[in-house]
Image 1 (tube, rainbow, N blue to C red):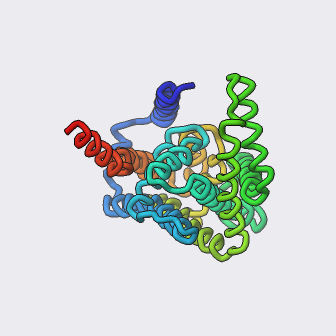
Image 2: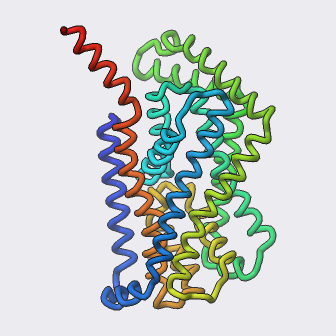
Image 3: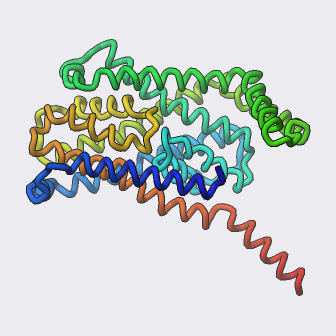
Length: 353
């Protein structure tokens, strides 16, 4: 599938899921009454929630910048901000968030960053991002804290599935990071498969380049293996990052003056929804996130406020995130690599002169 066709497919799929979600959420609801309840929310909490969403995105920028600097890459913090916005934008519009890392690698390559190093950094980012969910899920499952465990009863099955899928994903990526021979063999297998399908000698053409790339990949992997402190720091920053997004739900909850549950309970419940939907093949967990939210939060929001809280919290954590990331992705297209374009135009101009 070509790049254009793939983008059209992803856009159409996102729109279809969005329309189905909107129908399922608002079908049979009294919209005038809903609007009255929404107006009762304190907008200041929502504004703070939007700040938390931006902080959530920018936390990844800090992680990327930190690891790139540790590995000796010359990278700008402002460009790391753009990488993060690009990553979240494409993750939000593609099933299972598969589009984020390839898009980030594209812009990192335009910035002339080492592709093996960039790949390693993004793998570590993804592993720690999912590892936080695994730790949260396992802690809740093992300790079964009250009232969180009781409130989760309607979605036990989804939580177990989410933990299992995330554990498998983290385990698989850890093998790719630290089992270098396997990582190299997988790439070689893909090249050979490409040869058979398209009858092109890709292994001969790119074999040497792959070997040089794997040397850089090996260096980055060995560095992280010997410097576990870096990974621990990244994990701690990721914990803060995840907290910022989960806390948006609590801010919205408080904006309606609700107090049936405390901050720890609301934030943990939102975290467990993320555990459940993170690996599902839906853009941003659309549809299923809303269903799980209603099943859980109906118990602590009362019937009349469950939908308003869900609309605002999902609006901030998904749609505001999507909108801001879309704008910043356009900025990334205009900014990253622009110096090379200008230089090429100047060379072309003076050549003609």
